[in-house]
Amino acid sequence: MGEKDTRDVLLIEDDSGDAGLVKIAIRRSHHLCRLHHVMDGQEAMAFLRRQVGHADAPRPDLILLDLNLPGRNGHEVLEEIKADSLLRMIPVVILSTSGAERDIKTAYMLGANSYVSKPMDVEAFTAAIHSIQDFWFGIAQLPK
Amino acid sequence: MASVVGDGTWSVALAAAFGLSIGGAAGLLAGRWHLRANAAANQRLQTLLTKAERVAQLGIGERDLKSGQSHWSSEFHAILGLVPGQVAPSQELFLDTIHPVDRAAVEASLHQVRTTMRPVEKNFRIVRPSGEIRIVHGRAEISRDAAGVPVRLDAIIQDVTERKRLEDELDGLIRELWRSNEELEQFAYVASHDLRQPLRVVGSYVSLMEEELQGNLNGDAQEYMAFVRDGVRRMDRLINDLLTYSRVGRIATDKQVSMCRALDAAIADLQFEIEDSGGAVRILGELPSVLGDESELERLFQNLIGNAVKYRSPDRPPLIEVGCKDLGEAWKVVVTDNGIGIPAEHAERVFGIFQRLHARNEFDGTGVGLAIAKKIVERHGGTIWVEPSDGEGASLSFTWPKVIEPSEVPLAI
Image (tube, rainbow over all chains, first blue to last red; front, side, top):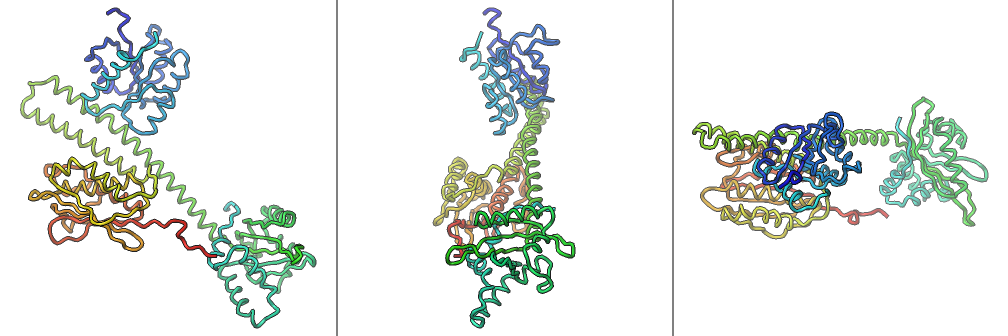
């Protein structure tokens, strides 16, 4: 497999513990993935627009977005991504502890590509991340 | 100062109270001035009307459109803070009693009655000679003679100050309730998200640590790990149950629901537990259709029957009976089991949130089940209690008010 088969995933998550779980899950998967982790919405937009500090950032193939972020919340970040004609085509998967109906509705209304509630135990969590990878990198066709 | 808005509720209430239609009430009451012909025969009716006026704090006035002469009843005077005989009733005097801010609007309304020939109702403020401000509800309409020519302006006024004050108080209470509801919603959201997030991290990393240290943990360390895991699992359940408790009534949609269907759904949900225990649920007789939220009713049965299965006696499979009794204004549903029972001293306590009667190693649980049941029943206007029992088993009863369809409410003609 060549370099281009490695997928770039941007994780927007302020909880290092949760981010660690995603990293472990991705390390254990059979997909070739580079995980880029940013802690809030502002840094995420800088990464996506290759601004200060992220001039060399790759265009991610998939965005994993937590809703509970400091400052601009996940919904606002999602809205901003989907309002940007260059970023709109990147699939955004919401990864949230919240299973609240209004969070789910709002996310889909704002154009989320799917909404995943973080499972409580680590095995289910890992399996969820693997399923996300299997779908977006195995089954779905992504724009080049 | 309360805002002055027009509504017609008092006249409906008054008419209903006297068994009269609105127009009939107005016509009849206003017509008292023309009942002089047969004085003896009308004496009783006059007295009755005067009493009715006083009780209803309802003043009647009329103005002859030809002569411009006004007549006011004594209650009409009283509402305006005037004494009959001491003043000469006239439209000008009436308008002079009206609060300066509201006067133009009342004048416009009176004008409107004359031009459109349709009744007008309005709330406005008057200022009594003592300086006291009262809120008055007024209704005015034009009466015609047999040839259809407008002859009279009939007016009814009612002092609604106290009612407006109560309404404002109620509005304040409702606003306060809304605010506290919003706060509760915010709390529930925080609980579901912010409290569970760190909990998930703890649980996950304990599992990962166990994985890393596999085989290197001695007996004690393994036991400690098990405690951590159990603590996390329990905390997660507590948060979930607390959330469920806080959500009762907040996403409910009340409609006609069949208790029987709710019970069947609850039994289906508990099928595994019931079969596993070798138990059975028997429904004695018919269950009614009631007004309520279907999923809440279902949860109520689920919690009651789930408890009956869980707190079964080790000596016998659980036998649960559900019966219903007609109490007239409400239904009473009784769920009886043959389990370990609830000691009389704990009969109240079992409904407290996070209240448990047994050690965790005997019966697992968070102690929220019956608190949720109580909240559901009380939200629907019923009560729930533990029936006093002499022997084995427990018996829980709850009442559920019957539905009164709007069409079943007797209407005054």
